[in-house]
Length: 161
Image 1: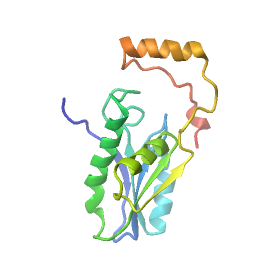
Image 2 (image 1 turned 60 degrees about the vertical axis):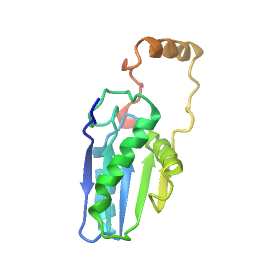
Image 3 (image 1 turned 90 degrees about the vertical axis):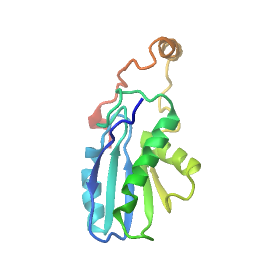
């Protein structure tokens, strides 16, 4: 199985003071970070927002990653791709929001030293609402038979920040 094509948006400036890699949340995509990227460029930061496989515009089945480690590998591959976008010694930061915050936290644990720091916004560490037991049981059964079956997450994109 070959590599998937990862999509991203860039707000790159000449001679940045720092570089920020952005990971979006569930049900989002990199385009929702346009204002952030533009604002940060005004402060001297180059920003790159990765579209995660699954919920973003990158290749891959919607709502599916073989395992969580695949997402970490995608982030690391992207980090290496943008590494040369700034002069040696320019600090790199990882920003993750919601599901992207969870991925960023785990990435920072597994790949220590790759970023000077992390900015974590509302990481998805637990569900805000209790999920009915029947849904958990049904999801587990479906995952064994149809591991890549896409199901609606019920989120309204207008309710996301």
